[in-house]
Image: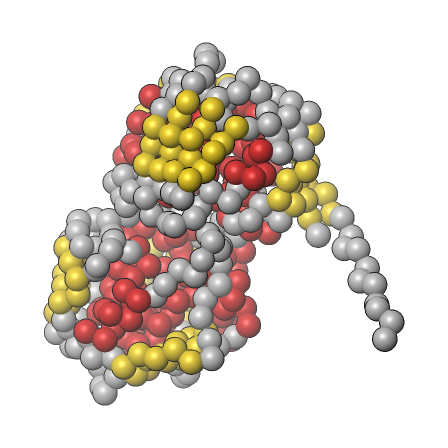
Length: 430
C-alpha cells in the first residue's frame, strides 16, 4: 500500500496550477455516451475517478484515444449495450450518471449501484428515481442493480427536487437531453460543474437553459453530434490549496482558476484573517498573522461547499477561540475528527455540528483517510503539524487530486509517498 509521509511546520510559497474539475469530468464522460461521433474533451484531470469511468466506457465498447495527458477523444458509436454492471462501478459514486445517459440513448439502463466515499450511511438515489419515473421510466433496484426502462423515449416532464441534489440534477439533465418534449427541473442544484455539463451538452447540440439557477429547462433533441470541449478548473482543488496556505502560512499564487467560483471559500478565509487577492484567472493567498475563529454552515452552491468542510474544519483547529461548523448537506461528515484528535485537536461533535476549540499547534501522528475530502484535510493537518505525520488510505485522496505530492512539493512542503508492502495474511489451521 502507499502512504504519505509529511514533515510539517513549513510555510508554503510559490505557485500551484489547478487541474480540471473532477465533479464536471465525471458527469461529462458519461454524457459522451449520447454523442454520435467523436467528442474531444480537454483539461481532464489525471485522477483515478476519471480513469475508472473511462475504463467502464471502454468495457462497454467505446473507442477512447489519448491526444495528450489532459485531452482525450471519445467515440461511443459502437456501444450497443445499456448495461454497466462491472465490479469497478463500486469504486466511484459518479457511475450512477450512466443511468441517465443510457436511458437517454437506449431507453433502458442496467447499472450497478455505485460506490465511492461513505459519509456514515448510504447516500440515497430517491430523487434520481423520482425524476426518471416522472419522465415515464419504470425503475427498480434488485441485487445491487438499478434497472430502468421506458416504452420508447423518455418523455419531458416537470420534476421538483424535494431536496437540492447535485447528482439527481445532473442525472435528470442527461436523460432529458434526448427525451421527447420539454423537461423542467425545479429546485435544481446550481454548482459550477452543473453549468459546465450544460455547456458541454449544448456544444454537442443539446438545448439546456437555466443551468446555474434553481430552474433548468431542457428541450429534448433528436441527436447530439461530436465536437470539442474544455472542462472548467476544479473549485474544490483550488479551495484545498487555499486552506493549506491558510493553515500552514505563507504566500501562494493559485493559477488557472475562476475566482468567482471561489467566492464562497474566499469569504470565510478572509473572516479568518487570510489575505486573498483575486486576479483574472488566478488568486493570491497569504497568511502571516494569527487565525481568527469563525462559524460556518455548509449549504448548496453558492453557499459554502460541503466538499470543503473537512479542510476548513482542520484549519479552524488552529484559530484562536471557539469555532462552530454545521454540516448542512450530509448526515455524518465528521468521522475524520477522530484522526485530528490523535494530533491534539479539540473537536466535539453532536450530530451535524462540530465545536472546535483552537489550539496552539498540532503534533504529527499516524492517521488514516476515510474518504476523499477527509483525506485532503488530513494532508493539510500534516502540513501544519510539528513533526512527522503518516497518512494511510491515500487511495481516497488520489481519486480526486491530480499530482498532489508534486504540487505541494513545488510550494515548499516536505511530503512524499512511500510504498509499504501489505502484511502477509496468516492462514488459520483447521
